[in-house]
Length: 335
Image (tube, rainbow, N blue to C red; front, side, top):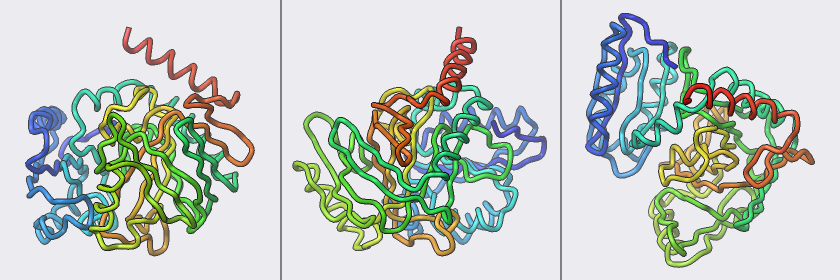
C-alpha cells in the first residue's frame, strides 16, 4: 500500500491508549524494507484535533513530522485537524499520512485486507464522478433518517482506495467523501453509532439539521448527555456539518463499534461535524475546536433522481460489475 523505499523515514505517533504490540510489528516491517522507523510517544489528549494542542509538545513534533516520508497516526486521541497536522500536510510535500487511531487489529484486517485496490478504485471513482455531476444528495434509512444537501464543486471530493504510495492525506480505505454546500443540509439524522455516545440497547440520539447546522438533539438520556458534551466545547461551529462519507468497503459489512471501521461500512454513510480543513473547504475551511462523526447504516442514497444505494446495497445497474469483481477477487484471495 505504501510501497516503502529503502532509506525512507516512517513515523508512528502514539499515546498511552495506543496498541504498542501493533507498533512493534509495524516497525519490524519497516526495518525489513531497509527504511527507518520513528516512534513518537506523546501525552494522551482529552479530545481529538486542535483541542489536543495544549497536551502535545508541538514545538518539537511539528518540525519532525515536516521531515518524514510516511506518518501513521496510531494515537487513541488523534492529531488529525490540529495545527501540527495542518502544518505537516502543508509544508511536507512528500508526506504520505494515514490515520488509524486505536482501531483494533481485528478491525484493521476487515478494513484493509478484503479488497482489490484497482477494482475498488474504479468503483469509488465512478461514484465520485456521479456525485460531481449531481446537484443534490438525498439520504434515507429505515431508522428514520431523511436528510438532503446540495453539492458545491468548489469543495474537495475525495476517495481512499488503499493506495498510499504517493503524497496523500490518507484514511482507512473504502469511501467517497463529499463536503456539502454551506447551509444546504436539512432533515433528520438518526444515528446507528455516534462518537462520544453509547447507542447500545435502547439508547437513541438523532439530530434535526437546518441550514447545515444542528438545531435540535432528540432521544433519551444518551441524547441529554450528548447535548452537554457538545455544549462543553462552547463553539457554534461544532454544530455545523463538515463532511459526508459514503461507505463502500467490501470487508466491512456490519457495525463493530470502532468508528474508523464503521465510517466505511458497506452501504452506510458517515456524517462529520465541526472542524473542516481548508484543504477540503477552500479557502478558509471551517474552524472549530474539534470534530466528531456518526454513522447511519443500510441507507438508500440518491444523486438527484438517480438511486445509487437501496437499503445498504448498490442498486444502480452500471455499478454492479464492480461489486461482482470485488466479491470474486476476495474469494480468490482468501480461499
